[in-house]
Length: 466
Image (tube, rainbow, N blue to C red; front, side, top):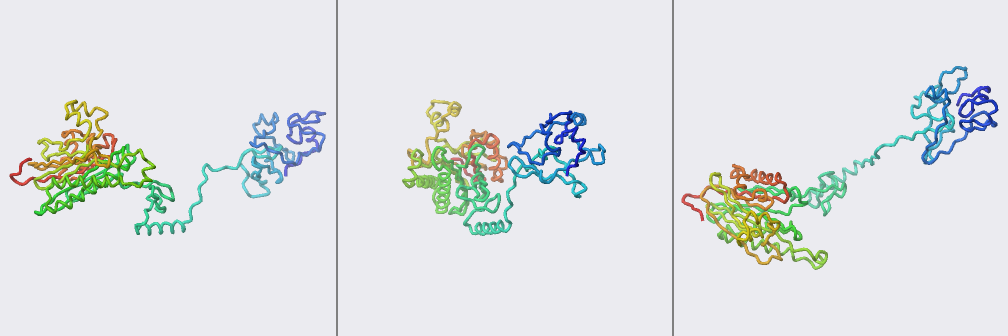
């Protein structure tokens, strides 16, 4: 309880705020206390405004000089400052109407440490601070037993091949859109970056730095010819972004062409004929994607049919065959860099047509914004399917670089491509494919990048070029 003031002190000081009084005052000039009532301070609980901003009473001159709050005189008459103690029924309320934290009890009444928070008004007993609130409100931790059961269920389902487990939380299932149903984390897509090395051939495909998905695809493999020698196959396709489902088109085309080649070559079909038939098979696979239900076309009637470009290579001892439709390319890079490299394909593009017609130089045509507009592709809306094939008989070992324009945009000429290809490409095809993809990414990676590196062995003695 607050120390009682002597009767004489009540006549010279305001019983409420202890402001010095003058003789004859009926009201306190500082706090307005009615001096005609009882001298004891009022025992009511004041009402706080909604923002809790109740100004403290003005300090007396001696308090202002001392820089502190008024101090009640002690019963023994000493002026030693003593802590003000409030009755428990004067706890006060905050701006929400809830009780404020109780003030610290007198040290003689409790062994608890004294309150060291904000000052307390001796007139009202209201603390002008608010209970501390955390900057963040952490969510309740999940029950580990439930999480463990969910993880076990997800692992079992993933092992059974019925569901994909989230790579982030390893608990939630991944929905059809590629997001975790538990934590919402987007899952990495398999086609964002793909690598494969099969026998002597290797390929790498990357989404690039600007596209939201990878619309390229590749397929590589090798098989035995009737004479027992090995034939190596590489097919690279680039989806046409302006068409619908370009990623599906490139994937379907690459797989169909690769399967056709690996099935035809062991039966004795000439590699050049096999390449022609493989491109036709790829076109049929892409055309089949356009056979959608009528309801699907109603939702997107303005979209073109799925479409892609294609380029492929078949390497046998002494013979190199390439085939293509569109602007994906194949390059020849000899092991002996003193020999000249060569580009083995001609683009089905606006720029190539302008150059072939003599209307523009190559530099002028490829500087035009229409340069990469293709005039040939695989798809149901293609004007006419015209597979291009060519065969060569190199007289020295080297590598065939089969790629989309995501690479050759940064190494357009045969000489530039040869400079980008590592010197050991014939013995390290996967490493070389990675280096070439990195070359495109370092150049800006504006498009999807796909490249296959196919070593060409030293030809048999007496072989010549075709």
